[in-house]
Image (cartoon, rainbow, N blue to C red; front, side):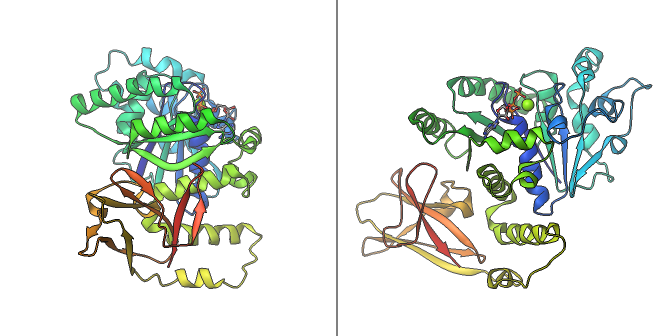
Length: 375
Ligand SMILES: Nc1ncnc2c1ncn2[C@@H]1O[C@H](COP(=O)(O)OP(=O)(O)OP(=O)(O)O)[C@@H](O)[C@H]1O
Ligand SMILES: [Mg+2]
């Protein structure tokens, strides 16, 4: 079970949209997902059509110490679609901080509720945070193994992040808990130069702690929320669905991409009224994934150091993916990969380069090209 909190105190940067649609995309790949709405505004609950029915079965009822209102966490879970459950929120949640203010363990309430509970049989728990750095967000960070920080293309979003990072530092010092933090670019409008400039700034700020998926602006995301379903159920072909499936795949781990795609393929076959077409050649090849060795080479005699980055390693520069210099000025890196289609680049002395000797390439969200390898 992996717990991921979606946090940024800046309002309107795409937290709830990310929580709902990441949860929907993971559920579509047959992972069991629980979304916890930890925002008294209840937007995630609205966005998945889970409000109104059960006012006394919300996350407030899980976290409160008031014996009249307290409920078991499992009694507050609502199933919203296949593999996707939610614990909704309501406005009462905003009173919780005051209620628990003298309790020593107040900031660990959510962590305690999620820990050591055998009945919580989920692959992922996704927590949608409110737009503040108060007690609720502290609880969410304490409970999380990973924190995704959505950053819309505005300078305010970036400015607020240092405060969030400060809160994480405090949690590390006080409780010795240090979740992995990843920034996620959201509301990206590729038609504006400003979006591109902001994206470059965000990448410079976060360096390797940034997810490679970029969430583009897409009006279908608004329509899906208004209809109370995730974008995967609303319009699987939309850019919003493509981006959130890509994010889910990245969270899932690129090394497991074939497993992810197989699960997705199978679940869409099930939802297509149980009409199961004959497996395609591609699907068949997933049935017995065998690891293959691939050698990546580049001819750059003048370079001092070169790394391989790609969706198989989260586009992160690391010693593990450093190329070795050969005697003739060439560099190489051998890698074991499971069958699939991978995007990659070389980073030579800090400069990102496509593989000029590989004609298979694909335009990326930044207007440059990634090289493609298919196994
Ligand atoms: N990629 C996108 N394309 C188009 N609209 C989007 C996108 N992401 C979010 N929105 C819209 O932007 C608005 C704010 O998004 P969202 O509610 O997800 O932000 P939030 O960070 O959760 O806000 P709050 O801080 O109030 O909780 C919503 O109307 C949402 O539909
Ligand atoms: Mg929200």
